[in-house]
Length: 371
Ligand code: SAM
Ligand code: MD0
Ligand code: SF4
Image (cartoon, rainbow, N blue to C red; front, side, top):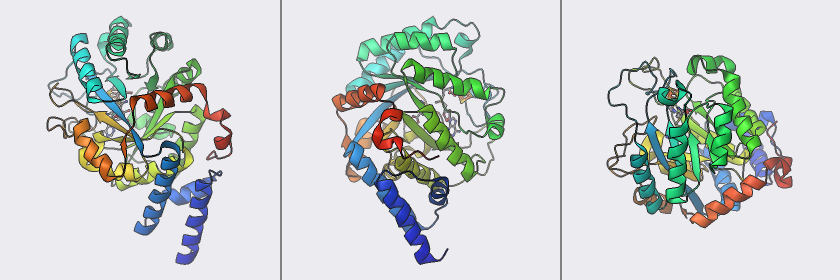
């Protein structure tokens, strides 16, 4: 395609997206293959316009509590895989989690994300009462919405989480290519991981689906993940660049530049205009926040208090002790982007309306599925 033709085509696609029209597969792939700086800027600009239409200049803020770094699994990409002989794994007590939760709530986060490895303490015994207890206490102490990220838990347990008032279940497939999945989440059943999210959605929980980029996926794989996210009716959609981890099989893996993550964030915004799309502090820390927000993200995740000895996932320590991953650390960045924290009331209203409106019955979006 000649340069003027390309530009016309890009404008045509972006105009369609701005009208919330259906984008076809070839159009989505065209966007995912953009490499020219000006074209990328046009795409980001459209993504910001769409975000602003649905969320004005308001951004949601998620506190992150990685309360157990023990795991029975061996994901090849993960620092906390069981075969990694790292020292200093920890399992925080209920009191410690409460203290951190309280601190995060006072600092102004809108949600608590309670995350753990597939900790053998619970998974091997099948006794999850302690986990339910921690979750219930965190919710009661703070009154905040809660997301749980405990791995692929049994169905009956998910029902119990629903009963104690959990709002969100996060569980990322990483890829929707079964072949690639098998090389990443070793010996973890693909369908089990996918189906537990379907079950969560059927129960009325909000769900977050997520993918990794820079891990050997093709552009078509990314497109297929968009389709899967749509089919799951996911409420929050995440992409994170793969960060190679010491002591893991992919330690020396030559990954791609995180610019590609930004492109995916922007395309997600075009395809899922009213959904939540994280700008994670866990990939490039505070220095990577502005770029992710400017690509169309509308939730800052992985906000961690500086003094509680808690770790991140893909960047276990980056910017934590320095206070870079706190609300005072991020507000100046939001301001530079012309954004500001939403109020808690605004977040609660979004959550409530999302719980009652599946995107499948929102007329405005019904005709703009990516497939
Ligand atoms: N253990 C639970 C699980 O795996 O579902 C919860 C932990 S969850 C926070 C771990 C997520 O962090 C993964 O699903 C993956 O998307 C992301 N992650 C882990 N290691 C990463 C890495 N090296 N680079 C980028 N993202 C990573
Ligand atoms: C984040 N490190 O928000 C966290 C994590 C788990 N629900 C989220 C990947 O970036
Ligand atoms: Fe365990 Fe989750 Fe890491 Fe996999 S990604 S090794 S399940 S903590």
